[in-house]
Image (cartoon, rainbow, N blue to C red):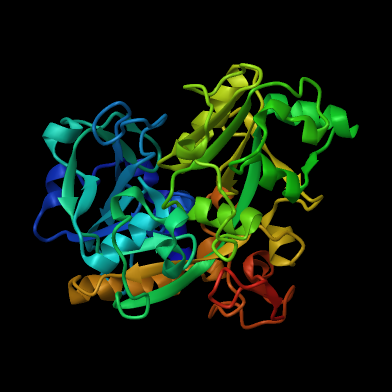
Length: 457
């Protein structure tokens, strides 16, 4: 049903943005408003799953402005906050009436931990302010499908729901807690109205272009080089003798500065990296490297021999920026980022590497041959209005359907799989429709990302 509506809607794009949701309409009392915080690793996936329900010509995207309060430290507009505002198509995923105006506020700053703690505690956090004072009086750009606005200010609001790369319980451990919630706790079984599985998120080990080329030379390949997980673990742990530089990888210029581009505590991507490479939290003494526990570091990513720099980003965009800055300096850098991020996009100068020889891809992951993936969830705030809770529950139930994942952008599709228990994956692995064959995974962690994967199909 939705496929047909999108096809017809696409024909209407030529009519322009005559019915786009401007600032006044976005803020109008009759507009359905939803506030969601959390995972930045799935930013494009979450945004795409909402906007594929928009009537053509009605989408306005309000983005955090770089350098302003909302986008402090960001390298691109929208790294930290976005508001997707549009009019719903008929047969939309959320059971809303055709023509309903919806403003979907999504906070990515701080990552998954902010999709857990403030939801559990019903605590106000920053969201993007949509107003003429924050966003100006006209969009900064108009494309064939949307109008973009850059907004500089934030407001305080408790989230209605939150997304996280891993289940909420993993954020109760010290090295996974966001800085704003280090003294807080919650009962994972009773803090939320509901916790719903979303999909499986595939993550990759990324390196700067200079390191990628050095690895190719060292390994005698023109293809995708590989890094052993044991060495990736050692390089990103406190206690590593950084005077060794990159020698464990057998590359030239091994004394180049060691740069680690990671996420700050509270990030779901970082929690996944802690789990996959350091067996944390079961290995409580893993000594995961953060800027605060490196006893000698330089002030910025660079290439000073014998130094060790750890950059901690509040969003996936800041990890990309760290990797890009390393490449610009001719430096070696390593980091973690989800596969929905496209290393071939304009302005990017980093690449994914294999891990223990395994190819980082959705297809390899869903078949059980690539293990760096997690099962992501959506949490709903008990204090949210009933109609908003219903919207979010529908969002979660629809998010993992192969037909909906197939409508995402090419880059977003590369980083997501439908769980084997998804309502759209009731077929044997490798069979069914084209979309089921593309997205349905045969592996599961059975709702607990500390579990080893099992094959269910």
